[in-house]
Image (cartoon, rainbow, N blue to C red; front, side):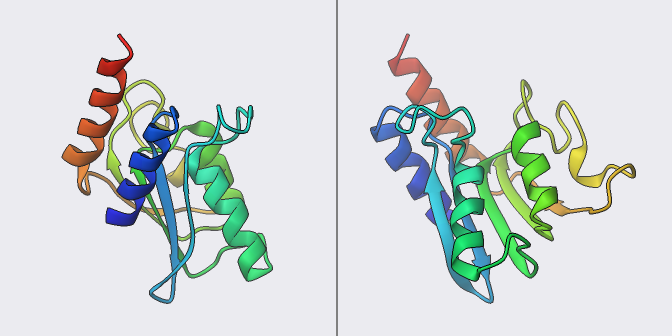
Length: 142
């Protein structure tokens, strides 16, 4: 999660909402990314999406079996859907997202009985640091 927070800080310094993501497989970082929606002019440029794309290219498979995704904030519906499609088995995230979270805050996509893949999740990891990054970012823009 510390590396994900580094990615979030770097995204914030680029003017992006400070969210970071890291994908680990067999104890090694496979991909790391921060938000790139503004930089890439891409609404799908969330940190999770960028990291999933990079990891899939690196491992040569869109199914990311045996991985853990660390992200600084609870994934949105788009990112949760991509996590399911990539068959990521584990998600660890920092802060809950009361306005857009799709793990449990607004939706429960990752453990929906309607889908063919479930994701083991753990939230609240280093949440205070993730919240502080987001709060300072938005406070500076008001």
